[in-house]
Image (cartoon, rainbow, N blue to C red):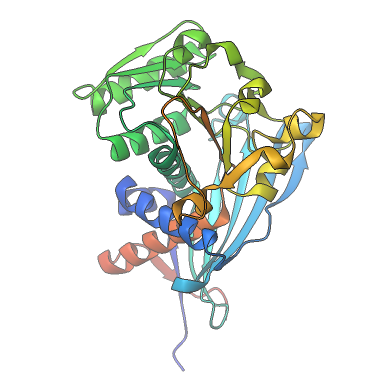
Length: 335
């Protein structure tokens, strides 16, 4: 029997192998399979490094229909850039052959994490935002804000106005400069001085911060707005006023995970909302078990915590592209 080798891909290699359009297609498939109950995905597990203001998460999954399994290890350390010059989020993904458990590939997972999270926001907006949405307000101007915009433009093709606010003015300037270069011909991008100016009158609001207190207030949100709540991905985090949730159709990526660590985790713990207030998981809407937006003035909220199945299908996509293009290095690691 030939000695099997594991393909190793750097994060930079992965980033150049996949496009947002492909990732959106793969991630929507993963949500569809979840909606049909054809995946295995235990809740992510956490190690908390309180002295370093960080955590580490493990995320296994198996998508039965395409026989793809993977495990992701990912951190979140909000002070990384200032302290160590490292990204806030870093990840490594191991792609496993389900028939024998062999590690097919080990790859950098940071770009995959960024892209699949952006893709989920784009897919949620496809089903929950108004089709004629023209104004987006961003709270947070980091990497994930850029990914969310990339995915939203992939879905909606163009917008009239993009407003962005961030507590860090340097982040806002960087967002505007980079996004102007990419999308300045199809939308106007402007920075604002306070969060309210980003939110009022926006058709879509994206929150992508590590905040532990509400940054988007109820009175700013107009009828018909859709919110992608991306930043709350650990217990205690929240970005929006719970009163918004009380008058919204709430859709989560995964109920158990969102209740533990998503935008709904604090309001649930405080008794402001209950699990009965959660309308659906996104996969249920994609497969038609429940409707998405049903009327123009409905306020909709997507609670994103990031699912292991999103990582698995995106890692599989990168792996197949690498084999086609001869990218990466092979090592003997398991035998």
